[in-house]
Length: 564
Image 1 (cartoon, rainbow, N blue to C red):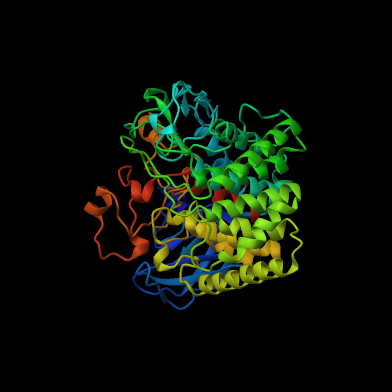
Image 2: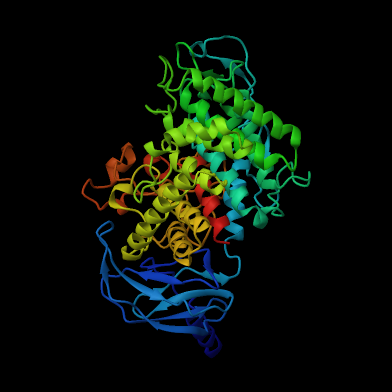
């Protein structure tokens, strides 16, 4: 009996006798050893002190006092900060708050985001279309057979017959493939390589192409680029998407046997300017990125970008809406001028040719870098403006203006983030469909600002957004599948819902809180007057809160690469 009592005391000392308290919010992946380390506590009654204990034995490594409670209007929480930035010793820890409990376990170390980055980037392999996928021994049962191999031209495309249906990534929780969303996704991932490639060159993703001499991040991106290239017509224009006419049910990819149609605008010229502009920009970046590894592919990408640019000169603003009989995603955008500006900027950076710079300089002033509302699939102008400066654009007045505007916006984001009780850059208006990607894109914006002018405050604020995504939020949940001790479990993601695995496919970012409540599950279970940051439920049917998407994962990949 005495022995059992001693064992119980030991377990209690180590924190194992109680479940973690959701009132304590930490980044469940961890904190870089040399950076700020803040946990948040949101309890009914204010707490006073906290300790940070070693996860292995409960030994106290740090003692501190909680900050004064701060009211967070976006969540309705009263939040106290637990600052343990002085703890730099690598290891695994948990926070202990008397009267409240212990936190989820987290790490402190030199590369705490290596594993989450691997899962988030490798999630694209899981989204591959047209090939059998198997995540291997670490994830037994996470596999599917080759899918969506039957392709055809839809009547709206202006042509007819069969069409190749291989390569590309399933866009989101559905099985469609969309050029516009692929544009911002692959562009962001290629920027990840261009800005942080030295850190990523030797990272293996355990994909079929691993070991072929090309870095795996580029190997994976190329799978989607090959599909995008198949969507370009002989005249240089690009069809917007390849999908079935309706969303399929929750079946595995190979069980969706509907025809994958190349869908166009339904009238001359049948292609769309937004898709073609995104395509031209991405192919120009690809020409730069792949040249050291596959010069022939780089040249092919550049030719495709030039042909797309020429088409845009004839058709600068052909917009897209779903044609009759098609009900899949539209990614509708009524103004394609930002896509054209991005194409011009990336082509100038890739070639140095004056014609592209002249177009950029004649049009860039129509756009601006904002402190509220970062880059997105519908707003790619920031990428155009930044690439002109990062690529060494020679017009000093334009470069100076863009740099000043970018830094001013970043300074405002830093101030807003520091004032937010949850230390996140989101405004109340940012809790929209895919709000977690908005947080990640703010992080990307801050890291770009840091590239324009080195300042630790930009990196720290970017990290704050990552901490929010990985558990330091009002739900105390990691919004990346299979990352952390308390990740979300029920994404709106067909393979995760249709397979027999206990957990969803790894590395996927939830859409996050959404004050719009556009699905029946959210409307039925969440009151309309809830604060915006509380508008989330972990349910498969709640697609407006819990869908996943390739463009949401992309800034997460960028952010984790940039702060590693």
